[in-house]
Image 1 (spheres, rainbow, N blue to C red):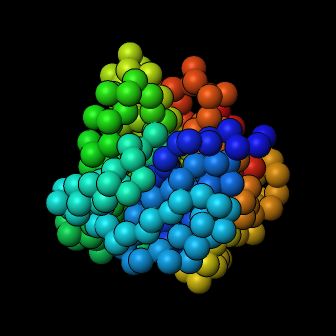
Image 2 (image 1 turned 90 degrees about the vertical axis):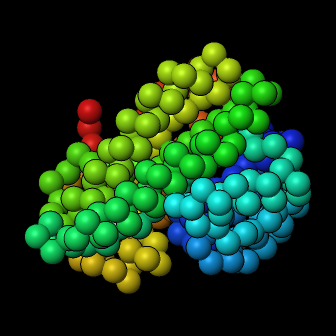
Length: 248
């Protein structure tokens, strides 16, 4: 596809590892400069982006904090310019029975996935509106459509992301900004391979049309597409990239 994102600036949250790292690398390979936000300094991801010849900055950012997000956005604008592509990937997914879940546990999960998406959009949409150009890609989950115990807070947060995506698309279309969501299935990453999800790999794979567990490089093409001009008329959609786990 060549450098179809040449001249663009992308922001990826949760970019220190796993899917976020893969998204950042692919957007850079497509020609975008990339800013990476994470709870720890994403030095490895930053180096991956620079290895493609693109500019990169990695900053510690708490996406649940308006102040932290505002500071991050100011650094992005000062060092890379206005954000053209925003990938809201940050999320946490602790397994916890509802009976054991405190309000603080509930709020923590919603704060990262849903509040964080809201705050990043608030930070970068004004510049997109000014230029009448922007791509917002929110990462949700195919788990929304499955009956999986002990992820009540995660499912609520990720369904909220879909609702935010659809509503925001309705408001942003007139400004040339598209807002879409991607719903991966269970993806093999360092986090899932060391967590309780590892025991679900085979069972979930057998529920899919394509019966194997995905790796991050198999998800990144959807982000690349939605970030490009090829997707200029696609907005308000949720694309399941899950091997046919969800067939709607």
